[in-house]
Length: 173
Image (cartoon, rainbow, N blue to C red; front, side, top):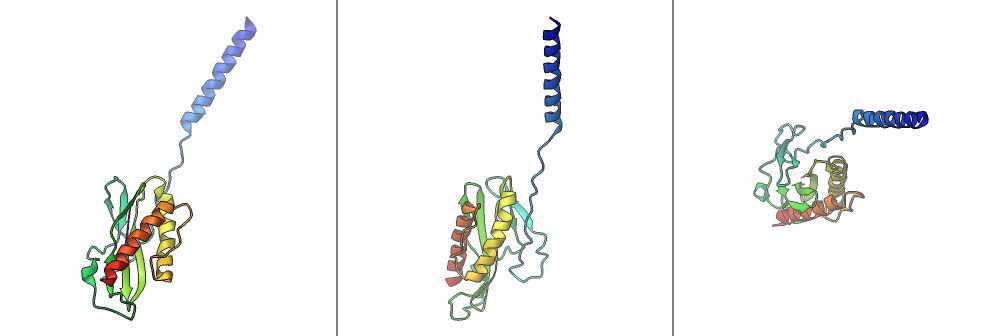
């Protein structure tokens, strides 16, 4: 009888310790970092403090201070590429994790800068910032919507390419 009592007390004590430790440990907070926004309009506004607007999924998306960045901001045809100077915003492209929208700046017929709004909630907060930064650099380098997808961010890459193509189409119009 003593052995069974000692075994029961030991088991209950061990279980209480395990539960107590589990309750005192919390999951680490996931940092939601946004890259510095690119001031595509050259308006001199503080592009390092982008405004956040919730998208339809309830997540925040970054938006640089260039609300007037549609095809009406073009300043005439440039270069021999057929792209007009100005800032052009592509259509918003949805994926299962949120919405991606690309804006590009055209000078002398070349894409000189690219920026995008994207979801930053949950895992998207750690996956999207470096992926979109890489896609922005690839856009300027490739001068087209034919950018390689970023590993681990396939949906974001596909949405980025669709929105980028729409922005380039707007610059061609």
